[in-house]
Image 1 (cartoon, helix red, strand yellow):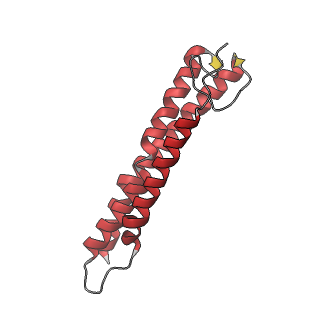
Image 2 (image 1 turned 180 degrees about the vertical axis):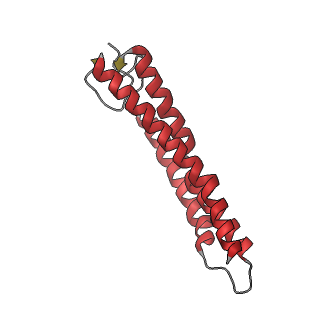
Image 3 (image 1 turned 30 degrees about the vertical axis):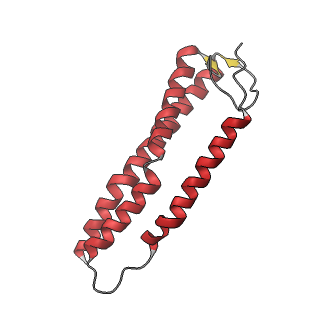
Length: 136
C-alpha cells in the first residue's frame, strides 16, 4: 500500500509565493481589461478585450482538466484508489474494485468536462461575442 509523500513546508511556501505573484500581476494589469472603453472605440476593440479576459480566465483550466483525465486513467488502469505512487495531501483509505473504477470513471468524466468547458470558454465564447458585437 502506497502512503504517498506528505506536502513539505518548503513546497507550500513556493506555492504561496507563486499565488501571491499571480495575484499581484492580475491586480496590476488585469483590472484594466474590465475598465469601460472610451467613447468612440469600435466594437472590435471591445471584443478583443473580452476575448483576452476570457482566455486569461479559462486557459489555465485546460492543464487541470488534462491532469484529472490522466488521474482517472491511472485509477482505472490500476483498479485502485488512490493509484500507486501518487502524492496525496492527506491519508485516504485505499479502495479497490468497483468503487475505485467508479471513482476513476468519474474523474475521467470530470476532467473531460472541465477541459471542454475551458476550450469552449476560451475560444468559442469570444468568437460569439465578437460576432454579436459586429451585428449591433
